[in-house]
Length: 402
Image (cartoon, rainbow, N blue to C red; front, side, top):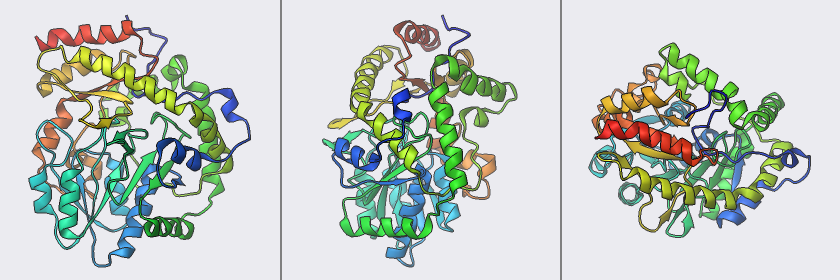
């Protein structure tokens, strides 16, 4: 049974150790590039900042193009970033019962104005890139892989982020390896890599006040990222937001319009460098645990449990389930969301359905994405989720699916 004193986080983050906080070492981007087998990585202050730098750089290389096409089921920060740069956002509906962009809809949205298509690797699983790449090449557009949730995922034996023109990762809290907030850019193209560096050198200020704030937040994460501390830092705000009838705030989808933009300081880089030595073993354990639990959940009737496509490897921060209908998804969340067992939602809505984004997101009908958002729930893949807790979740879900 759930404990009133413990809280399993909704995603599997790599816990920091006291030794990680000591002031030594500073090679985070290089360490991760070596582990992932990528070209040099560029460290920025967040995944969203990385996307901003990528879009700004590509706009300079393709004057006259101003349209960015994104899936309708993705993080609201993507829409906020596109709006901040004054670019035009187009929403692509997803294919039925999935978060990948529908190929036919994507082809109809793209034209000579298209700057970039942004497919998203969600739940640490590799997105279908064949359609975005084919459509982008047809129209002379770029592909930016949103791998914010997929650090360590692999596609055909190679890190995600390398099939498109640019890829970016997130180092935010709960995203596997974390420096509280951080991001990484990657590209196979040497000229484009130099251009990304140049954009960051020109546009990203030092802003020591922001870096001090992030350093203090990282200390808080190190102190509270365990089941007892998370009851205070995550569980109590979650229950308060749900009690007030605000699921958007409960999930953390209510982002401010301003995106922090600053350089990452030496101390946080060092913390990430030391923690990164444990990342490969952490990812391997995540995958082993996830594959066993996916098999267990797939025994339940009527539920879709997402897994790895052929020739791909996920990073598995959480498990994504699609309930047979919105009513049973609501019932599952009513029973489990406040249980402390790491059951949650990824994004509460499809992008057009967030009221606070009405001035930044076109009112485009996206029925498949709206349906997906209403039926999807997530289950944490944290190592703190023991077998008894997982079986309790299964036992709650099973009667709803008979």
